[in-house]
Amino acid sequence: MRIPRLYHPGPLQDGAEIRLHRDQATHVQRVLRLASGDAVNLFDGDGNESRGRLVSLARNGVVVAVGEAVSARPESGLRACLLQGICRGPRMDLVIQKATELGVARIAPVSCERSVVRLDAQRGERRLAHWRGVAVAAAEQCGRARLPRIDPPATLDDVMASLTADGIRILLCPTADRGLGSLPVAADDISLLIGPEGGLTDAERAAAREQGFEEYALGPRILRTETAALTALALLQFLRGDLDGS
Image (cartoon, rainbow, N blue to C red; front, side, top):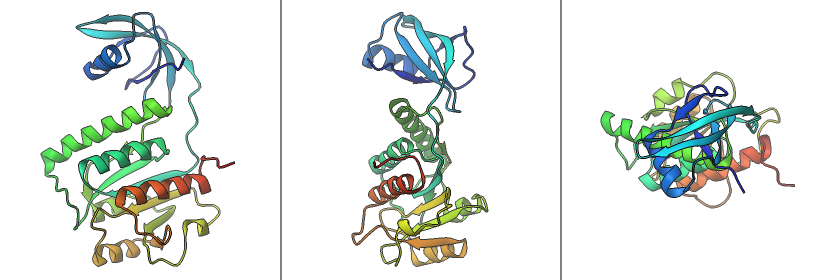
C-alpha cells in the first residue's frame, strides 16, 4: 500500500509533533480517510522528507508525529524555468500541475499583451496562492520533495530581467527551422518561453530575441499553450533531464 505524502513547510525534526494546516487536515480525514496510527511521509518543499505517524485526528486539527528522515527522490539534473503566458484558469492549473510533475524548477507566470486573463494586484495574490496549492498537491502525488518556485505574475520584460545570465533561452515558434533535438549537448539550464492563448505579439518575440531567446519548433502542428508547454518540458526532460524512454 502506498504511504500518503503530506507537505509541511518548516523543520521536520525527529520526535517533534506538528499540526497540519486546516485544508490538509480535512483532506486527511475526508478524502484519504486515515486514522490515528496510520503512517504518512512528510516533506518540506526544500528537498527533505521524513516518516510520520498520525497521533490525533479531531475537529480542532490533525497532529502528526515526525519520525526519521528518509532519502528523498533526486531532482532532475535539468534546471528548467518555464515562462508561461497566463492563460485561463483550468489551463493554467493544468500547466502548473503537470510542470511540477515533470520536474520544472521554476514557473514564472507572464502577463502578455494577448493574455485573455488580466490580474490586478489582489487577484494576482489569490491566483498565486492557488497555483502554489496546485503545485503542492502535484508534488505530494508525484513524489517530489522540492517544490518548484512559482513567481507572482509579472510582465514579460520584468520576468526576462530576472533570469540568470547563464543557460539557454528557448522561444517556441512553429516556423522555426530547428527542433529541440538540436540543443547543445551541455544544455542543462534552460528557460522556456510559452505565449498565452493568443500567442506572443511580434514586438514580444522581438524583445525576447533581444534578450537571447532562440527560436525552436516542436513540429508541424500549432499546439495550444498548455499542450506546447508540457510537450516541450517532456521533451527537454527526455533529452537533457531524467525522463527515461528505454
